[in-house]
Amino acid sequence: MRTPYIAGNWKMHMNRAEARDLAAQLRELLAPVKHRIMVAPPFTAIETVAVTLQGSNIMVGAQNMAPALNGAHTGEISPLMLKDAGATVVILGHSERRHSYGEGDGLINEKVHLALQEGLEVILCVGETLEEREAGRVDAVVEEQLAGGLREIGASLLPRVTIAYEPVWAIGTGKTATPDDADSVHGTIRRIFTELYNSEEAEKIVIQYGGSVKPDNVKGLMSRDNIDGALVGGASLKVDSFGPIVQFNS
Ligand code: PEP
Image 1 (cartoon, rainbow, N blue to C red):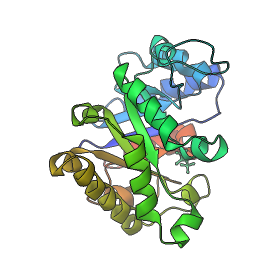
Image 2 (image 1 turned 180 degrees about the horizontal axis):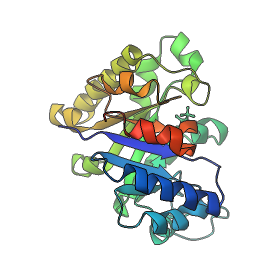
Image 3 (image 1 turned 180 degrees about the vertical axis):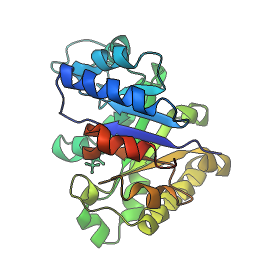
């Protein structure tokens, strides 16, 4: 039985005061929720949000990290620093990192290894561009990103890994994959897990959908067998939209 998992990616939004305010409102509203919840503020607000959410049912994550613990890496953030600030989760391979900052599967795999070694949970994002979808390459792209991102990650580490399927053409565009389309790719992801690991791991792996998830489409998505959660961007910035998304089943 997979526990639903809803995560909010605040991207490059929120100063510390705004972040504290939103976190405090979410803490109160979402206290009765039984499934897993995470918010990923920008680096500068992680500590503030972690303090605000201490002892609550909402985890704090980061949106990226360096593939190194310390050293001459100007402008980068180490997993040690993320943990020190209070993060327990990190989002890796987000399409904005892949497509705006040129991150490839090799680099993402290094980060996945280091994050897991350091005891963080990982949300590994995969997903095709519109061009790749139109060329009929959805399965091939997702397979390449999963095999590359999870290279030499042993099955014993998978309880700390979540996959987010985020079709690039649906992120921040208002276009959502239909529940049928998303469920079908999530089914493909489970098949790929059977090949990379085994059918037991494929059954257990939690797969979030991401791409313009809103209060009015979350129920339809979450009702599908293979969709276990959501990674939410724009709609995670307001309690009025993130609240109802997290409470999709109440
Ligand atoms: C995201 O940033 O991962 C995302 C899915 O964004 P949005 O919900 O705004 O499409």
